[in-house]
Length: 271
Image 1: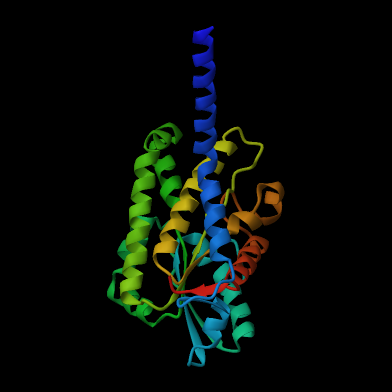
Image 2: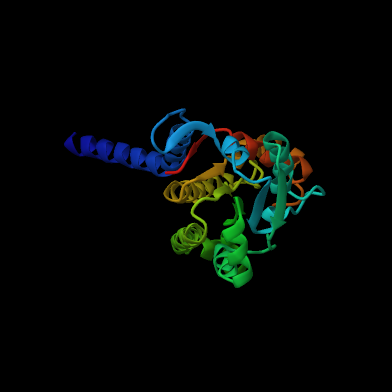
């Protein structure tokens, strides 16, 4: 009887641990989102939104620098991609001209982007930017899987994850040293896998891990916001917004752009 009791306790503990492992990233992301969107007024946080902040800049133009991979570049869109679409909306909302400089490069990993931004030309662009939009991280996973195969990729997942977290922190740190004031907008990774695929639950968990890194890094380098693209690019209507097996189509980019504008409507925060 005693053995059964301890077996039951151990089994329940395993279930609880498994539940926590699977849902912790999602719960932590939800907590960060709810606190960042809260309308508070302190020395460093006001009810002035990020869009209001851009509107109040004492200059007639907003310089928008776009960095990252093929999604940042706008692949799948004939209208410049989500960041360019959002820029046009920002121009209407702020009454200012938004100068878009898209430096996205197809295939870029976080390591590639870190090296790229440290060049003299990009350094100057970062220094002059008012708004910097980043989409990076998907290729860190994809390239590992293509190079080593899915089994090896899973086995090396923790190492890839740690490298991504380190690179992202270094990217944000470099940008903040060069430009302490620019608003950084970074994008969540979305799940492009069909929900009917057997490995969909695993990809959902992995992306939650990746996105939690983005949220936690963003919180250390304010003023920064994260676009909740996984909320607007859902697997339920994947066929409507997918361009190929990975990239969003025109509708997908517009959804991300609208989500970007919406997140810029939360209270501006310096820390």
